[in-house]
Length: 192
Image (cartoon, rainbow, N blue to C red):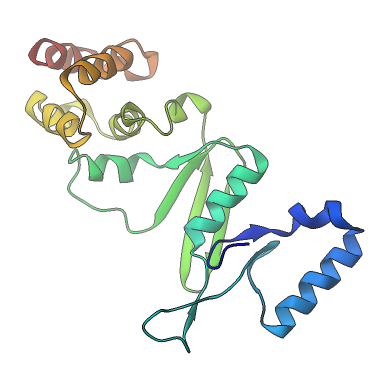
C-alpha cells in the first residue's frame, strides 16, 4: 500500500473472513495508520515533505479511478473537459465529471466532489488514446461552433505525427456517432 494511493477493502477479503478484515481495517483507521476516504476505500496518509506534521490523503479523482479499475469499468474524462482542453470550447467545466460504463455515482473526499456518469461504451472508445479525447470533445460541441482551422488546432494539441493525425481523422470519420461532423472532418483530412 503506497502512501497517498487509495485502495479498496475488498482486496483484503481473501485474507480472512469479511468481519475480521473489516475489524482489522477499522483498528488501523482508529490508530491513524490509514484513513477512510470513501465508503470501502482507504489510504495511508502521506506527509508533506516541506511540513511533515501535515499529511495528505487521496483525491476524489483517484478514488473514482480505483473504483473503476476494481470493477472493470471504462472511465474517461467527460466531453466538456476534453473540448476545453482541445480548445473547442473556452469555458472550463466547474466540476470534475467522468463518463463510465459503470453505474452513475458520486465520490466525495473532503471538499472534493467527482461525479461519474454512466454512458454508452461507444462514447468511451479509445479511452486512453488521443483520438478518444477528440471524440468526446466533438460529441459535446456543435459542428457549427468550430471552424476547420479550430479542428486543426485541436489535432495539434494532441501532439500527433502527421501520419497519426491522418489515421485518427479516418477513424473518426468512420464513426456513426459523428455524422454531423463528417464534412468538417473530411475537409480536415484533405488539409492534414
